[in-house]
Length: 318
Image (tube, rainbow, N blue to C red):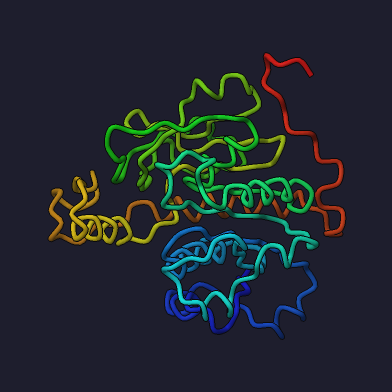
């Protein structure tokens, strides 16, 4: 099934060239099935690239998806034109009375800061709390995943001695999970972060399931079946050249950065990288969309009803 996005969104032309099915308003209204409404809180600096990456994987699923782009009210990005934000983004406070089948919260280039020092941290916490009653399922990416785990469970993040950067092999620990069904036992995943979460800090929350990890890069994928949250610390949605663009940017800035591991053939930045993770991205996001389609209420007003309370630590009295 196609994805429904605004006709003038820059991602549309890219996806049409790639053959990703796009549906127009008239065709969408003729279909009998209800489209899934997915909101994206895009905190990345290069918003157009992130929009395209996420629309690509959401549009390759067997369900009609309608995307709503959300923005913060306490933070105005400096790297995206104001007109683009006005044309395509909705302040989340303008849609807080609406219900959504899914909410994606992206990463952000602020991971070295303590959570509470992030200027928009209080607003993000409000969005996380709002999602418990207005969103059926959540998918949190990179810093967004760390932020969600910290907000709901107090789980900390840790500074790495050097940036985890490159393509790393990850082991799929539960191939029977609805989220990982169809993935190979070992998959390559792009990694780009300065911080990490430790598995030991999840031990007090036995319902949190680690679905994929790496000996070298640590945890990648955590599922919370009670709050219906997916936490992905890495970037299966990345384009073929995203890590290369980040590397070139940091080199130009004079930042201390090593060549992304296992990315360029022969570790030679002059050679064109080969995308080895694209199919895994489509499988993971397709599984997530399929799980939403099978479990979300047809009557959207019922989303959030009977949501369980946020679980306490196993060693904490109720």
